[in-house]
Length: 125
Image 1 (cartoon, rainbow, N blue to C red):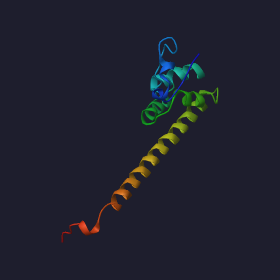
Image 2: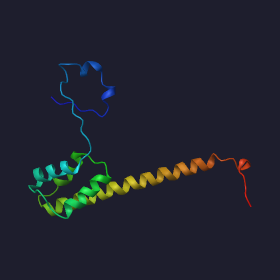
Image 3: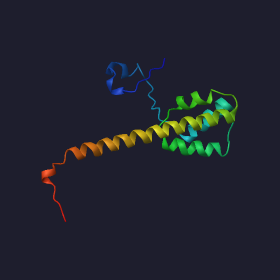
């Protein structure tokens, strides 16, 4: 039996004691090595330059799970099509991450600006 959770700290301690869940695995985001294993499993390929290099670069800039990568690789049996689809998806995730960060930074600047009391500003001429 397999249990999964994103919040181990919220589980009842009785579930975690010895004899209940004896093995605990931390599942991290997909690394390049993890991707290569998935590509070998789903597409039967070991290396595919330059697409592997581009995917490696994108994986370092995004937070995607192995399940998300596998989902893209399963969409086509053609390695070129599947890898290109993965690259497109990783680029979309990267852009969303960058846009979210930009929006957050802009909101912070806007909020910080609101906190300034114009009466307390020192002007230099």
